[in-house]
Image (cartoon, rainbow, N blue to C red; front, side):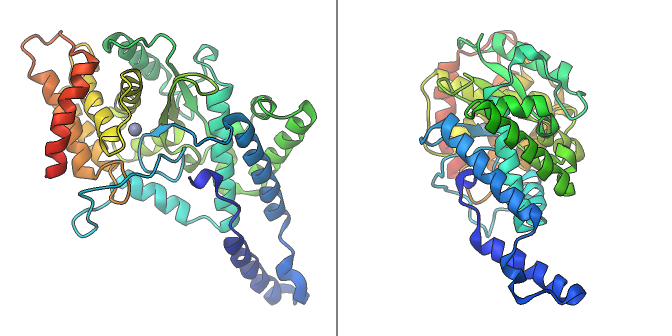
Length: 370
Ligand SMILES: [Zn+2]
């Protein structure tokens, strides 16, 4: 639950000590300089308090239920789950997971607190204000909009669940720099005056911390996730611009939108069937249903070359220390789904979602047994 952790006092004192040593060299700063945080530190602390207040108001005191695409520092934290088969001696984290953690590791403590704050604020906008009807572009420069909308349209028709109200919305770091949008996000819980002040503070923090590139830094939105019914904006799939930027860099650009949205829609398939597993099948099931979708004639109909890229992307998202599945387990789950589509006597038939879930449960036991 990194989103709600209190400001790291330990990290803060380390940052102040680092600033002090620089000051001491340059200006022989007074002895009490280590107790005086920089203006950026103070702004980040204030913004963090505001966004955490907002989150408490809009999400309530309960733990948020949202299923992320992979174990990234960005995005709502999934429930911690026990994990079998992830022995660090034989497991290596996937490339996407490693990359995301590496980006966060480069941040100073103040930047890290700002990252968590800004990332959460962007989620609140995506979940509480954004709607599919407002037709915001997908991808930092809108380059994925057509594919994203074509994919969600296919998925709604593909699975047998009631899906008319499952929205697909973008999660955009650039929203943070949009005064109109942020005022709406803060107004979900604050008075107009407080919302306006918090919006100005957000702009200030973005300007003070160039590492976030005015909201374009991929880390701010380096994940995607699915939100169940009953949440503030209703059922939705939230597709992160930062994840699309990063999967492009990893060479998965041709398949990323369909694979990610196919996986996230798989969580909706689980929700609609009242299937809430407490083990890795909560992630690997959607990998399998997504595999079925991308290989199926009435789905994305990917050929062998593209399916290879899907397998690589599935492995890139695997991790060794939490319940999303290891790289090889995730690759195997997606592959099983593809095989179900490719092995059908009638390539146009679509397996009912309840049967797909039941069949995968059997396969899941085999994958986890190695
Ligand atoms: Zn997921």
